Image 1 (cartoon, rainbow, N blue to C red):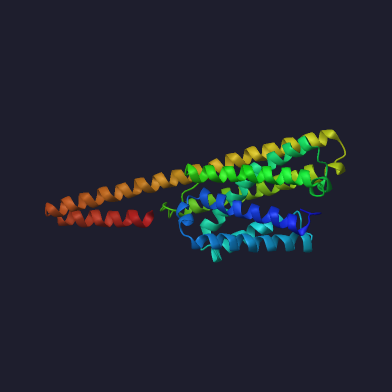
Image 2: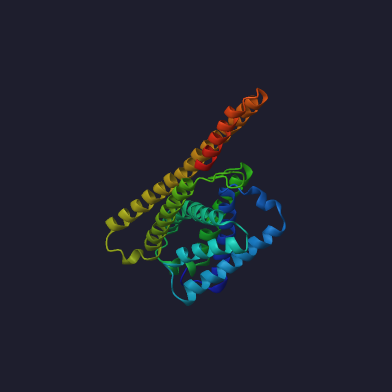
Amino acid sequence: MENMSLLQFILVSFSEQVIFIFLGTLSIGKYHYFKIHSNYYRILSTASLVTVISYILREKLGLVSEAPLLVLFADIILMIFIMRFNFYEAITSSVLGFSLIMLVEIPFSVIITLLLGINGAEELYQNAVNFAIFVLSTRLLQIVLAFLFYRFKFKVVNMENANIRTKVYYIQLIVYLISLCTIGFLTFLMTRMLIFEKTAITSSQNVYLLRINIFISLFVTIILTLAVKNIHEFYKNKNTLNNNEIVQNIEYIYRLIDEQKINEAKNALISLKSHIIEH
């Protein structure tokens, strides 16, 4: 976002942060969060603080390439302390929100810059028409995506009602989220190079290969997002089966007690206790 005026930066970054928070929260199934009026103040406060942090990193410290990753860490921390998400909710929401933003913004940015003939930051930020078309159309698509998530209750994982306490699940979830974050960050760097540093690329073949790599990375991002969803469903179903098994064991113990089979009931209780501890 170099070569942007302060007003342009605020318009771009703040709107992106608000949509990012909405998409991230909806992607983990926390729909009830938007039913509490005070939570909107938390969202606006978080988006405002992240915008300030992003401005300092990009415009004051010159960390343009590193900023998205650092801003993502800031989002996680602020979601925990301001939005009152727990640790796993904050990480999952931030990474999924980042991925969904990238899935919309990156391919559209590549296409719109080709259509508008933009070759560098100055042609984008110093041309009011190009800037307005680029930002408004991108935000409109992201708003439509957020609306679809809210309207049809789409979610990648359901952290609002899920009761998964398996350590293996959280380990696998973190691994997938780290992979998503890494792919997303690399895709951002390639897209930035393609749009803002195109003149520095020596041949048209390199430009073509860069575009191919970007779309391959987006495809991998989609696969990893689906993997996160599938692993959540797997452990959720497994947890449901375990709960059903516990209920069946309890009903069996009731029958043993009714039949005055106390020793068998004790053994069944010991077996049930061992099963609960193991799982």
